[in-house]
Image (cartoon, rainbow, N blue to C red; front, side, top):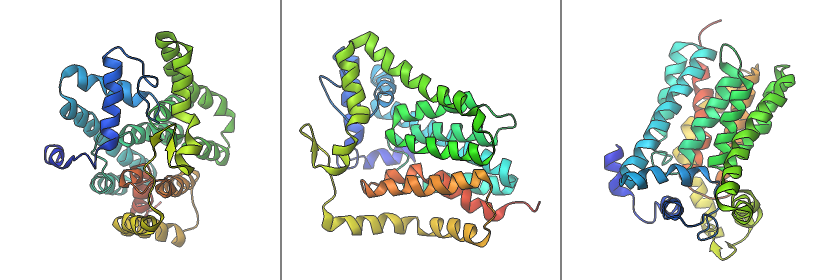
Length: 305
């Protein structure tokens, strides 16, 4: 599937990928990221993609990294479903995720596959593991934020789950874990490139949010906003591709109102991450919501207590 999909990676479908590799090439060439070239994403995706460039196999190694992330994410979805609902439901959750990720362009070299993996690790270690590891969960979420800003959405949702579980006392360890990777990444940029570059990295990672959402360009860089006349058709097409998954997930929740704290997190994460498609009507935005819809669907097949 990875090999076949590479034939369809046209310029129109891979604008983000080409931008990521341009920034990675800046780093490999010894130039200054975020200064000599700008792109509104956190640093981890660019430094990760320096590996395929250094190996001389830009798309093959890049897609291999994405494939590993997808496989690991499917295994985590299965494991979370297994822990909460039983073996059969866990397998259903993993299959729903791995089959639908193709519709969501989740096999392209984007930030989302990397981000989803670490969001799922954060959810697993804080909500589902036999012995909770709140600091490791925080580290995982911090790394996810280092790949894509939207991972920040999971932060208040996980804290809400802690509150519902009466485990809010572990929030400091969790928050310390979130902060540590971000401090390390931006601290490394400060050490390697200086204060001006670190300020630029922070700006292009988090400071451009307002203009990216509401304006046609950011400091001269086109934001590729949807034409208002195309917004609703694009949104309808995106939703229609996942309508059965969404319907099954919400019908199960409506039928049984007794939600565990973990399920409250799944429901809110599915809704909040799905709503990011209102910002840009790109199908790969659905990858962030997909594992949580899959788990809510698998809930219907849970073992009898």
